[in-house]
Length: 203
Image (tube, rainbow, N blue to C red; front, side, top):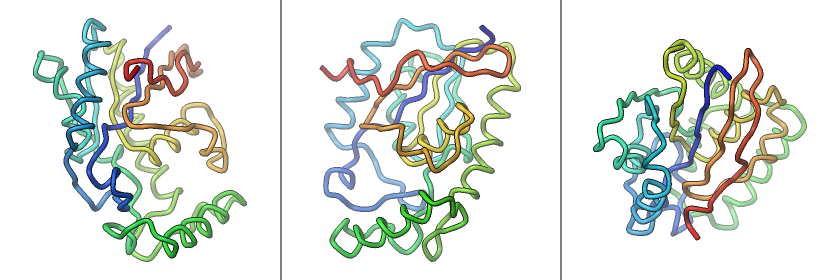
């Protein structure tokens, strides 16, 4: 095994709770539930000897791993791990209009149109480019054998496709809740999933 990577989604924000579209352009804080989720994850995994933490540039990921950072684990922010930008829909409620718009976009992605995006937003192909840059940065540190990555739901689904060498049309195969954990081992150039959508720390 060359490297082990723990990948988690950030804790709940108030906008998550209210069903407001976030994305890359909305830099929201964790709410009380999200902070409790982050604390529960830390309590469960605080004895794992992470050598490095990587997060997006957005504060909700920073707050989710704060316990590890405060305990002294080195931390680096990578903009490539940011959430997909939903453009004109960011900050708007997930009402019937939004549901219809997102369904239409998802159908395009499911049929392989990975350049499709909302006005002012990003396409999966654009996100994949920056995810590859982030992965290259993480893998370049060959001395870091055990790392924690905190990112965002949609971007995490795409990241998992990248790691598992799957087409982006299969991103829906990677479900996620707030602070869900995917744990992978890298041997050579092959990733293997050890934990899949694990939320045992929340029980």
